Amino acid sequence: MPGAEPFYFKGGAAGCLLLHGFTASPQELRGLGEHLAACGYTVHAPRLPHHGTQPADLTRSRWWDWQLAAQDALLLLRAQCTQVAVIGLSLGGMIALQLAAEQSVAAVVALSAPFTIPPDWRVPLLRQLSHVHPYMKKTSATASWVDPQALQRRVQYRVRPLRAMAEVVDYLRVLPELLPAVTAPALLIHSSADRAVTPADMQRICDRLGSLHKETLLLPRGDHVITEDVERGQVFAAVAKFLAQQMPA
Image (cartoon, rainbow, N blue to C red):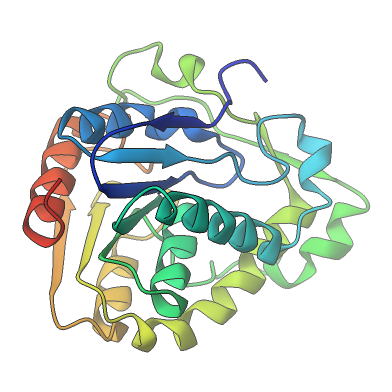
């Protein structure tokens, strides 16, 4: 898919690994990446496996494919930088938290990260249902976006493969046991208007983190993709301020 390419901005000795969300691409984090690069950081945003091509490819994914690809990207960035922070949106936030639990990182930022499994009778049956209805259509854009063309500009799949959604659910079952092992300084940001992931998940994650330094920010207006929505400037500023305190560029 045009525009789904990974990006890398060479900066100083402090690096930022940016991880995009489910069915999306690095494009949704490009604005944040450019902001952090302007602050002096080296920035790398990989494209997670089976994203940015065609939805059928994502049906082959297992959740550890995404995690291992992110781990490889972290090792690549570490070879260029003396310290690295991991930053992820939605599914990318889950992966960032796992990396912080299993690797030594300078800081971790989770944006719109999920924690709970949706209370839907279809969730346990996703794999079975995928044989009948392989894909679920996404909902249309809403007025909460930065401008009316925001969703159209996004480089993402227009459907969610049910088989891959089952992998996200499996990953959510693993996440709680990982959080106490996260000891790096942590910043969690969520929107109270998020319709994809309940805002209460931010506090649930925060309560379980082993980090001594934890910060949360609840935004009032944006929807799930807060790196592109109406409060993206506030998100960029909050992330940059947090990193400047924990890992100066």
